[in-house]
Image (cartoon, rainbow, N blue to C red; front, top):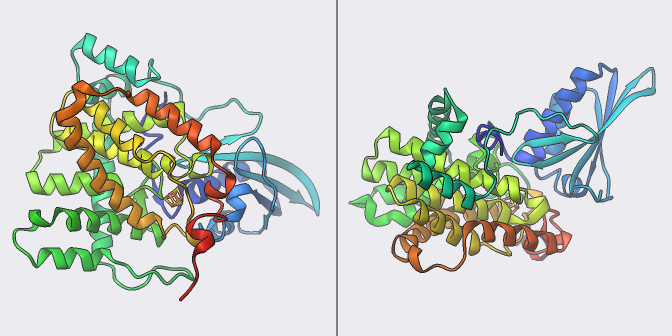
Length: 396
Ligand code: SF4
């Protein structure tokens, strides 16, 4: 497994696979091939939800003189595929096929080059848990041991960015960009909650306000942290920030929680998928919920078995969740879904605290099941905006 720095990417929304990944691919391609003109052909999910996810916009901003073509073809290798072509004197001088595999990570076809090396010796939660028990360390210290120097500074920056997204999002009002004209709700939820005393009674609304704040920032192209993706970027910050404020947690606990959640997200990314185009929303918001549940458990110093169970419950009860963003915008159902997942993460942790000794399903099994379920899903339900709410929705 790679560094969790690869999982927590800081960048602009609304989509890690549809904006961050393609932008990175374009930059690399341009640095290799200076040309007068470029063409980018988008396939599969990148094409079908590219307009709503602002894929064409980010490509134009990055490349300048470029034609963006939306193809109706699906490429077997990956649902998020793009071809980049360079021209000089009207002739093609270079081309590359790139897969945007989730969370802003890309892969150039035929290249084994990896931007970052694999640094963890273990791939499955069972192996990591056994190692931690043998060494007498917690999951967060496992992360520190293999990530090495500077990781706490990185985790600090991640949290700072999450908090900034919440703060900015809570103050914004009005309508989100796009044809849906979705009203921002974070400010309303937050101010309504703050009017009541004591605010902790209104946990549901406060946690939701924080999640809405981040996802509304994401939907409007603001800066977020992929946790593990842009579309699912609100769940974890909502839980962390709420618990931080409510229980006056010290910084060390927050950093431990982010490191712990990083391992959970990394295992899912490495052994399954965090891409909605590949495995539906269970891979995005389901994974975010598992990360948030693990983070919450770490905040309260639960055991490694309880942390595992919290993450397992969170992922298991998102199995089968489809990705069906209306008109391709990362707005409905995405924003509200992050809030619901944040609340579910808190509940999952509560259950894990009492029931972890009697459980039958381990986290690795839940991850494997999620991926198998994702592969069995018809393409309509994997970020194509051809099924589910995206199909039945009608403007009133
Ligand atoms: S429905 Fe879920 S997976 Fe699909 S775009 Fe929205 S957040 Fe991402």
